[in-house]
Amino acid sequence: MSRLFRAVIMGPPGSGKGTISERIAHSFGLKHLSSGDFVRENIAAKTEAGVLAKTYIKKGLLVPDHVMTRLLLPRLEEMTKYSWVLDGFPRTLAQAESLNSACDLDVAINLNIPLETLKERLRHRWIHPLSGRVYNMCFNPPRVQGIDDITGEPLIQQEDDRPEALVARLRHYKDVAKPVADFYKGKGILYTFSDTETDRIWPNISTLLSTKIPTIQSDARYAS
Ligand code: G5P
Image (cartoon, rainbow, N blue to C red; front, side, top):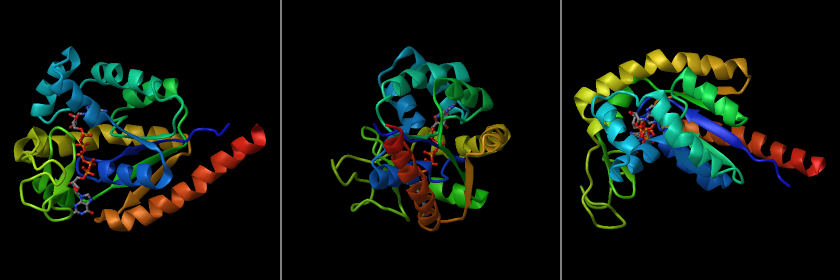
């Protein structure tokens, strides 16, 4: 049986975690799990955790650790048979420690993108709320402005991409991310990628994963 591959991707809001995770999922056949999507599903379903999470997201704050781990860890338990890339979790050291007790990671990808680039990207981001499809009016615009390509429904700007919430999100990210990066650095699995363009970062991530994923599968072949 093949050993499973487990990666997390961390980076500030707008750093391209979702875009790169989709490419990883598509290229390497991994499941893409997004903490932001789990939160938004719970908000839409008006679960207790979702109602609570919404009050934080509206202010551009992180959802408290106990709420996030309660939302996320059961979803990971459903994924024990799959290789995955987890996008947006952990955000804090406490979350990293909870995840560490639940599973072993192979790689932690850290995106380091300049602040001005982030602000510019998020200003232009629109989403299709029901599917979570993301557009950027410059980088990947919809075919018709303001309209989802697949369903023809209107696109919206997320509450936490509005300017007041955005600045708070970016400021807070810096404070909490460093201990998480240090945690993974200590484990020898942190890989940091710095650039202003996802298309320039992606080939380096793809090369890294090409070296890691076959190694795991061939290890497992010899082990079985
Ligand atoms: P999310 O949904 O995890 P964020 O804020 O971390 O939200 P976000 O904003 O979704 O992350 P991203 O995934 O890093 O950004 O980036 P993306 O969506 O791929 O790209 C951003 C935009 O830039 C897109 O429009 C994309 O098309 C465009 N783009 C990408 N690359 C390029 C490029 O090279 N050039 C250009 N021009 N454009 C590009 O979490 C939402 C909220 O949920 C809570 C928090 O409140 C969070 O703010 N939450 C948590 N709270 C606590 N703990 C956790 N673990 C939490 N997880 C979620």
